[in-house]
Length: 172
Image (cartoon, rainbow, N blue to C red; front, top):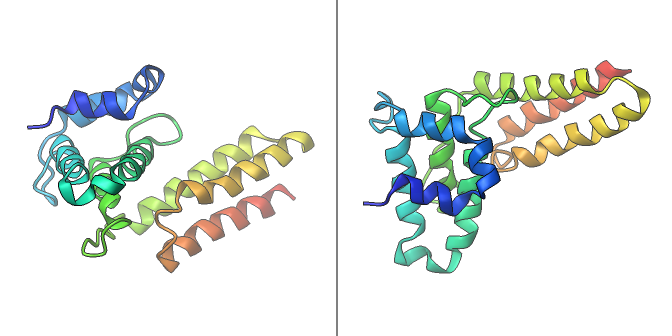
């Protein structure tokens, strides 16, 4: 069986391991989730093993990059791990963008909307001077890149676009 620490050590630098230490601890200690019938660490090992299967040898590096991004998205703007359902959903969504036989469109729309609006609001609050607003507007536009794995779904793309539009309008 794959060791969970080996996965984290492969995906993250020493600095990133420190940055995501709360998330890593939470994933390691998570119980079985009733909806998925898996713990966070079991889901992570499943996806990691799938990435390293013979079928995926040619794209394993790309898939590991996607998995890393999904894990980074498991931390909210305050550096707290998102809820367990959100963590497991993000881990499994690594498969969604790479294999059409998987459909893990399971992120709760309301939770995603709140997460995006919270990120945008945080950036807006932190960038109040005219010079900071220019920087803040670019950061907000980059939020779309953070969620590009979801923008293949028009519904989620609309949520992201609306959050950006509302935030930019609120600055004026």
